[in-house]
Image 1 (cartoon, rainbow, N blue to C red):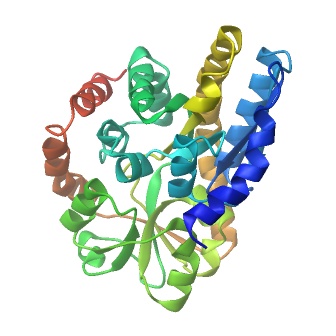
Image 2 (image 1 turned 90 degrees about the vertical axis):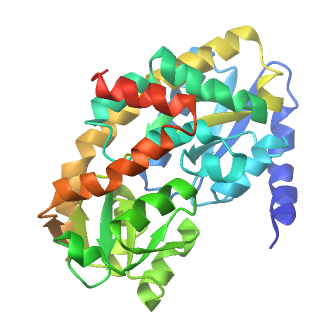
Length: 327
């Protein structure tokens, strides 16, 4: 099915929701499973929006890629066929050419969930979201999927040498390609929804991923070795179509932005609190949790990528400086 067929089907779901001048129901999708923390985070946002707008704006959450994957969601939002979505920030440079969002994927620059939450709810976070305006998208907040680690099918990865040559799924953006080539894997760009079957069939040996996705997508049935690298975080951006946003009252807009900021804070606290429980769940389901013996050397290998990318967009410099200052 091509994306225009998908959009046509989605339009039948979305367009009626915009009919009322007063009360509006927005259909918002995401590309993760309905058991994933992205789904929970978007539900938190929906509840806050309903409360803060006195029921004037209601949000229905659609997980499991019902409204499309990240690329389809972004394209649909831009042309007004999808009301809103929660989209992985790493996809924005790929689909929209939104280079400032590479600031959130610099390896080993963020020290904690709390630090990232603080920065994203600051004026700098607002400045980053505002860069989406040019793409007819209103960004209103973030939900965190969790620190990224390394999942391999059979081979335990406990040292830098173990990464060499592993066919590893990455999001196909230049930043991730540069990071993982510096580490020595064989990076393979692949859609998120194809990861399970690719691991199962041996098309790939490994994937860099958050543990929340290993759990929610049942990837632990296809791959049994996790290495806790914690190389970067994985924010999802809560966004609304500009076509929808422009029709809202100033009061509802202010309420939604407030809901987005509160959701960001709660979602990051939730992601941090779930990390240990997710590790325990995976161990109970036969996954071996490994540590990298030479993590400091891995950080040193990827440090030049951070330097190179700092020259690509002023926003990346601002975020790196904020993280370095411990904000």
